[in-house]
Length: 87
Image (cartoon, rainbow, N blue to C red):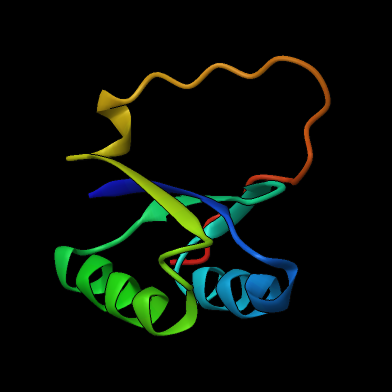
């Protein structure tokens, strides 16, 4: 499945969240990663995120589609990161 993770977390936890997501997906913008991941990887990411974030302060949004070709993506303005595939 193709996922987009968008997060708003305390600066105290920012590097840990970013580092975790970078292990599975591609950084595309400040606080946004996307990439092809398996359902078991999504479960693992969510579990690991729950051990990092403070649910009373932080927020993580997860958007998923069965495959990237079913998702429309449009970009306006400056490209923050060169798109590449880690997986």
